[in-house]
Image (tube, rainbow, N blue to C red):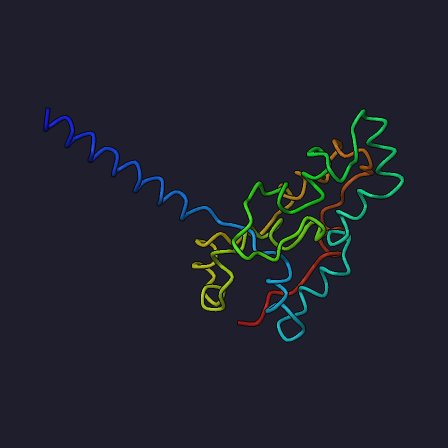
Length: 178
């Protein structure tokens, strides 16, 4: 009986350790404002470029008359509350990531940095960002055409085609200085 209790105890500890390890590997959102603290004019103004982009205003478009009419036609409620709409108009719903404690992330940021580059909780530090391999290991992503097509496709009620090279040029932002 003691052996069985010991084995069960060890098994319980192993499960707790594995669960803790998995939780530690889960990257969380920090919000574009946090990204913008470093990605300013001196590093290529990635934050400023994003602020002027349609991605930055993706959530706002859900409150437009056109979006409300589309949602109504599809039998949906308010588009700014519908998962089907939020999935491509907000970072959190697109990534399915949680927000970090003390996060500055808000739905209203639309499609922020972390929608394309992955939740930043574990690669946000300058030390990690200076090491490309370490940043990628910590969750930093670099989107390609296939990634963009997750939202920019015929499932969108306003889809009018997608030219990846043209659209990429519209959101291009230089790599930050190391």
